Length: 333
Image (cartoon, rainbow, N blue to C red; front, side, top):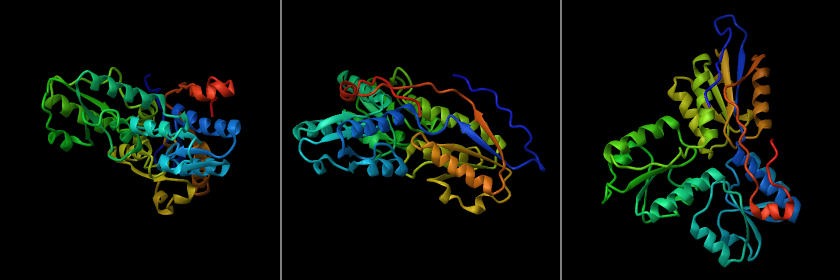
């Protein structure tokens, strides 16, 4: 879907200090689904509900669900035998699923469908005898899960240098997949280098980087020429949020990742006329509004919401919840 035209209006000296509030921002369909899964499970079955890893990478969201009765654990060994357990939006490896069955856990899978797509691609390529090059960040929950689908056939690369160091026995049967929350530009460079080194390399039928990651990065690029500062609302362990900061930095605009308004350094806005505000795909809207209110208190009284692309993606609930709740779709947040 093409970006809509964007008119920044008056931005020169003497113009009113302004906030460009980017849209789309914040929750994507996969995050909405994952949070709803935990909330519906708590409402349906009651506490406690165990969640392996953070359901999404935002500490405010996790803290709120913890207060509601969710118990977050790092490993399934911390979950009592037979307990009801939710897998996070980032997905899990087959080994984790095996462990869950061995412990007789009643699993509700909140893996984002777009992450599941990458897992299925990895399984397909591995069965066909391909060596898989996975582009992603080491130790990220999503990457750990995807690597687990074909660990003996998968090589992880994070940059062009990693590609240059690759040694693959059969260059005729190589494919690449990517983490869903990467920088579009950096991933493009890595893919181009892979194609130079392995001319017969195969890729996924459709881009693995998710629609929400792409849309938020494209919006940042569109507004970058008109602002002197970008604030990205998101937690430190949110990959897609960190990529938004990097994208703006690469376009010559200072940008900072903030968990909430308390993280804003007053020095950042000194001499700034226009500031853009966006949010990573796991950051709730109330945190965005807190940042906006803080900026207004610092003299940024003009506010323009800039919607550059429409998002209408919605995902259905996991079948484990549909059977007991009667719901089939996720309500918009």
